[in-house]
Length: 241
Length: 299
Image (tube, rainbow over all chains, first blue to last red; front, top):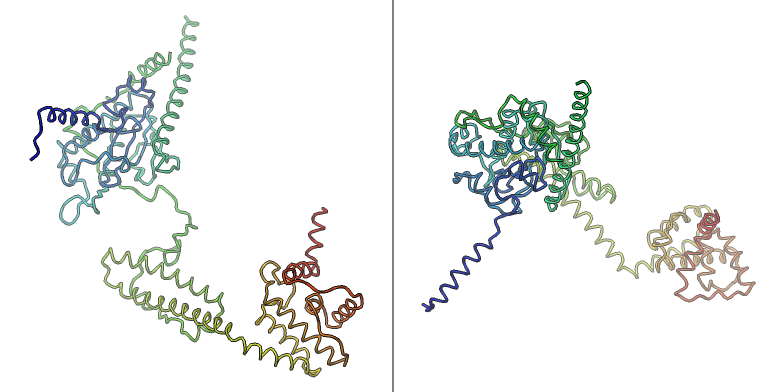
């Protein structure tokens, strides 16, 4: 066994610490929960991005057009052999849907709600969730290879649940493929559905950033319209007074 | 300003909300069942090419036919004798018909495998018959190719036949003349690849060494026959310039042109390298291709 001096050992320890700090855990913009103010300061739109995992079928929610290891840790709280903690690998996560909300409060609330529902499915309401899932002959969640379609279907159900529960009017959902939306009966009539623009998966990040830009523009336009209306009402009130 | 507008409007809107923006008690939530995707959300074009993988195309109701339905079809593979009588185009069509059918069977077999369907052996039997047809088509084409390649090697036999034909052509009586002309047309096409109709000749691809030989042979035949009939004693044709008229025109007109050429004492010798360009331009001019082009340019 090679002899190591104290200095060498210390250097090695420092190196390991340094390497730990250099480890990339995902997009830094996706780190941490975003409040309404954060979203505005970062020039982000009132959107939620749903990424699906190509390998396992799990879905990751994000407030920004990117994701971080912290989000994976938060949204997959009790991993087991049927619901493993997914990898952060960039090539595995593809956009499944982008939900656009009427304002930032709705977007933040919807994200909170979705994460809470996900955690509840894994912890407190584990039995209820398991009962609703399609099983195979062995009584386990149906799967093919490592792929369990039930997880993405649950994410769709949770999204519709949150929208209905909080009454998030004027929501627009853009799907990667409209078939994922399921039957119309699950959605309130207020929700608009559309499909994402055709794109090369290679250019997913560009697409998402463009969607963010467009949503911000649309949001600003709406605010201006509202402000105009408000001013008009205010002016009328002053004149009548 | 932007921020103030936002807070103002959203505050006024949020104050009118009846529902809270958070779950009150997670333990009391009634989870929703997973929402399964459905094909009802999009339309499939009736012209979609993948419909060709189903029996009955876009009107098909089931992706897997019953095994008994397959046995009721009572089909047999094409026999070798039948296929040998078919032209290349027909064989091509049969090949693709069979291929389409095999694609359908392949789709059904794959489905039957995943469903563990018990009567799939009927599909397999049918597929074997179809595969046999494809094998036979390949064999027929191989036979034809082999025969063609062998025929290329039979040079002596070909020369002998051409000589015999020449004799017969020159000595033919008037009753069989038309018949003989037709035979010559067929021979020109079979041996030298010269199309019977001048307009069918592809100037870019058809004119080659074999074509030149054909022109030469054709001219020799007709010149020889003319000399035989008239009893004249004229020198044999010298070059392609003298031979070509026999391909383009009637024998009498061609003979007149040759005699005219000889009287004018124009030098008709031509280097080998110039022959093909000469043929292209001469045939093109005769057909009027060049004139058309010139007219088009003028316009």
